[in-house]
Length: 230
Image: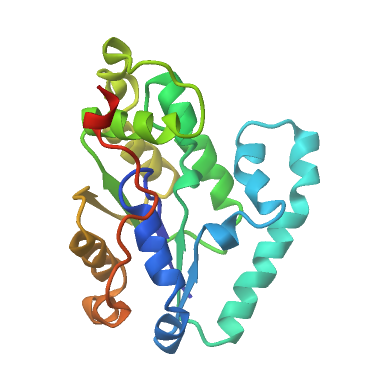
């Protein structure tokens, strides 16, 4: 079974893409494509596996061992159902948006988390997809998004304008390459339009599938704009 890995990232139209695929399972499965989004990847103890293994004690890893067996069984079921391709999509694989904001960096522990993910997969992914966003734009977007969920204070320009200095997109791609050296990595820049989401689906699964998916739901997981924060 060919394995495809879509890593997001946060605030790059990932939710719209995932929901578009989630609501058209028959189209995908008729084409031999299984889709595992956040609902699948974060179910039960699965949610704790990657952060738990990435930075946990041996005892914690032993506690999460049944998750590995659970995933292995799930992979076998997909193959038995005739699925030839599996697309895994979860932006939290790389890390938490809240940690990016607090640390003013991008996915500082991505390598450890990807190594944890590798322990769940039946083999290395053939292709890995990542959408990136301008640093300043990304910082404003996560500030606006988190402001509706927690106390974040005023936008800290001095700190957040340097978000990509210590561990930016180049470093994230380096982390991906170090864990999955043989995978083909495809990058594209975020554009806030529904057509861009359909284009991303086309890159990952083929443009015929993207056309059959149809209209992309608008306004999903939308945050306030930068004008609302001043």
